[in-house]
Length: 609
Ligand code: AGP
Image 1 (tube, rainbow, N blue to C red):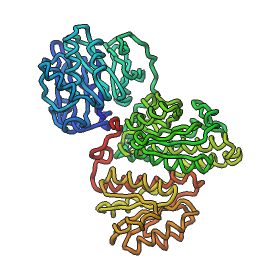
Image 2 (tube, protein in one colour):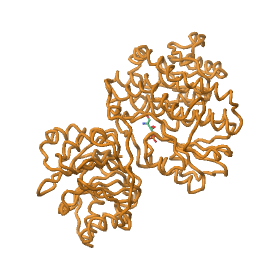
Image 3 (cartoon, rainbow, N blue to C red):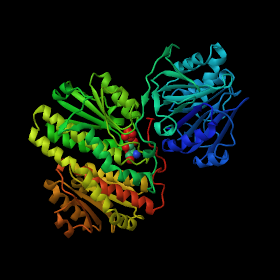
Image 4 (cartoon, helix red, strand yellow):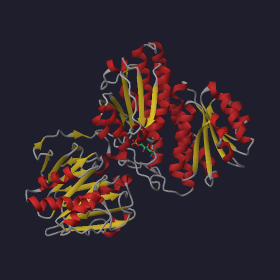
């Protein structure tokens, strides 16, 4: 879960590497380092802590000369965050220098082997082992870089994206990848490597996706790919459509607030991509499979799982199909019984989440087709799925997801309607009515955002809360889960989401004077039931916030603070009710003076198990 950037060309490498790393800080930010090749040697500079320290240490990169280099921002897995464990790592004699993203599972076994061969180790990282393994094969066989790297690849178990420089091959960068993201950017007389598009978008829009178990060689004028046998292979470049500015903060104080405000646009763009002249068309999906479905499995992690919970409710209601939902980390190990004529839907913003990727592979191994809902174009899950429906949220930088979650909901609603049409459970007229309702969502979200000052005021009163509970029933429970996760990940306040009717089976004992309980009441049929649960906690001292739709004004008899959301079809209420909850979490985090976009212990893309 780290960020890699590399450059080879005719410009000073260090400033390019540092600015690229800046764009990847969301992938990890406990230490960073660069290695740059000058006329005679490779100079390495590392710093523990935020990337700014590396900027300071290198005079914004100006103090490190050379036109070829590799850089890394780290989120520790093996080895504590420290300067010594920061990448790049090098072989004992400095012959091989490299950076790595991923986890090498058999690193201890490889390390023991290298120790027996006389190697020494200065860090506690698995990366140092990988670099020294490449060095070992380089020296042992003297067959060149491709052979040294592929021999190491065969021995390494786990995941990796590697960028390497060899002292004896000036002006070249070598890369290798297995199960960790890595792209190659092609420029004019210069080439780039990055873990993710934003790092190189200001330099080039032409990228290659290097495949699993492949090697790449970059010089200023040439990019060559090799398979594990050392044969040259071809890849077709892809043009990235994202606007570089879309990845910037655009005047907002934090990426999260910017991304919250981008939701109307993201939701609209996602809908417009798949709804043409009032009809839903997922061109990338085989509709005969959808029509023949007898069961659906939804799999995701974190917020993607919560989007899946809301999607399950919409799918079951509109298609009459049984829908199971699993956390990816559970699905992959529970030996799921996948029935015939079924489909697995994997939901992931990054498309790189290790558990979701493993769940995908398991489903495909068992002969069940996988449809993925992904935001990052060309990501691993997108490429390995049978079909991929992209959410059009644009780059999401804040660790706490907002707009990607909202666009995942949109794709799930559209899928539910379309499968319903194909199975005959949704008539043409009903589909048209539902779509008409969906088309209003972007404006309704904008209206909710206009009311943000009220939430900000309320949030400031609860910034010192110790516990906050979210309760709801049915789809409102799914919204509660997302509201609670959003709050805890960025405000560090303990929070739980509870199915409202379940509180009295234990959790209600945690309620004391002044505990904030947020009730979600968007489903008319469950309104009275949830109100009763709110009354139960109020009588034990809870302070109540309610999120319900306009018209339900009787809630004011019970709740202390009410937020009203516009009316929409009940299947789509999640898209509106989540907005005040995102704002609540955001403003509490701001009031506490926390690092909203980069909360502690978290990274944007969880590429380890
Ligand atoms: C959400 O705010 C979290 N940061 C996290 O739960 C996230 O949704 C989860 O890690 C899944 O990521 P993915 O969508 O990239 O697979």
